[in-house]
Image (cartoon, helix red, strand yellow):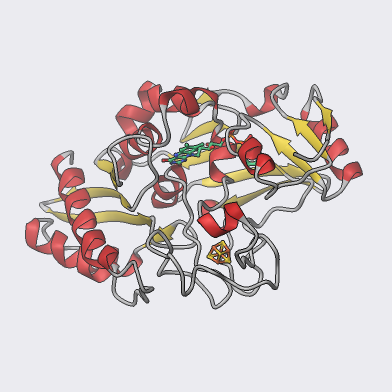
Length: 330
Ligand SMILES: Cc1cc2nc3c(=O)[nH]c(=O)nc-3n(C[C@H](O)[C@H](O)[C@H](O)COP(=O)(O)OP(=O)(O)OC[C@H]3O[C@@H](n4cnc5c(N)ncnc54)[C@H](O)[C@@H]3O)c2cc1C
Ligand code: SF4
């Protein structure tokens, strides 16, 4: 691992000043559960680490008012256990519970979870494999290689790496907002705008500048969150990333769907909202037949790679089952 300097600022202003002065060779560290792995693999080679664990501004869960606010430093395990999250947004709690392991969830922060990088094996292992995300301009070994776990939505000729996290899939279904602060002040962006599709620049994962810190995540209070679930299919039932996942939430009025949210994980380069499937359900009864139809619609337009076409039928079934679970909670 490359040698690095270490700083632990005491407040947000000092952390931003340190970042702005240090430039792009600097990384923030929260739980360190993925950054340190990437440093050991020489994927990340920062000259300086800024430890944000001293920043009180990034802590706390605030359930008052018309939104739920989660500090970026809240540990995944603490958010998953929160009683309002469990009651009002079961999909958020379940997405956190079904991620990683208890030890990791105890250590890992919500902000770090959002910004984890792809698990593409070529990206993590580097030479002799071509990887545009790791070495811009080198090519993409996955497109004609082992691409079972890769994306068929949102990819490009340069990169088809799947976004690996669970929490952001549930957040995009809830139209969450991310507050970030940097040298130019504070701004808010929709979670849907946080992650970048690879296009021609796969090495840039997020729409953040190097001096920006995620401060908190805001989730609008709404009744659609209560009848919701995060349904995750993986190769083993614990401690594994999603092969396919679905965050589903529904509001039923007078026996028909008044509001529905469907988001997909494991199949796209960014957290993916299945809006045409949502549209197809509005004003209709939600039963096994319409849920299965929505599942099929969610995967229309998928461009599968050599080894991941099985995820189209699997994914449609995961959407169907998630909708049925959510409807059962309505
Ligand atoms: C074996 C294993 C299995 C896993 N399985 C899953 C899984 O099934 N589902 C899942 O979702 N995740 C999974 N993970 C990933 C895990 O959830 C992440 O490692 C963790 O959430 C990262 O949080 P952290 O606080 O440790 O981040 P760190 O490692 O500290 O940071 C990660 C990145 O985020 C940046 N960062 C951190 N905080 C901020 C902030 N506030 N503002 C701006 N940038 C910030 C850092 O600079 C770094 O680039 C797994 C990890 C491992 C090792
Ligand atoms: S899919 Fe993306 S991350 Fe994986 S090898 Fe190709 S360029 Fe690299």
